[in-house]
Figure 1 (cartoon, rainbow, N blue to C red):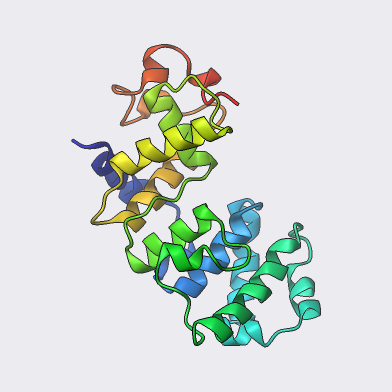
Figure 2: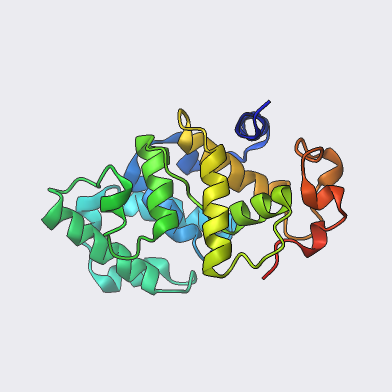
Length: 218
């Protein structure tokens, strides 16, 4: 069985029930990804619900004032995130006729949207076969492949990108990206990963060589 299939099967059985996983609305996915950039799911959950309730679409967000958004964001920190959300919403109104771009290349041009966020929105909302690599993904791939170089430098990042691209499920890229991220969050955790009940432990180089606690290298 392919790694992508194993991850997707695991995800269908173990994924947390989160509101942004019940939609393919690119706006909701975008908001959730920005909130979760520097925030744990448990804390971000209530902020996400309040945010999309008050600003349900791009037009509503673009018409908000920075003061209003900062007040709603209070307690989350990293306030540049919400300032970028406002700037990007105005970009979408002026440059894309109010519609969130449906591809990685254009999403990447929005204020505050990096490779990971663009990949997440493009794959989950629009089924574009692109990867979305965060810390969870880097850790999973590093351990499975037994990568013994730093994943923080350009060489390590390129290697991770290539390895994830090789196993990306091109028919279900959004599900795959969510699956491997969730797998890193719940199963292949930074500390105390659940290796004894891991569906990938037979092919995991780090597990086989007793190096789980040392990978990924930073």
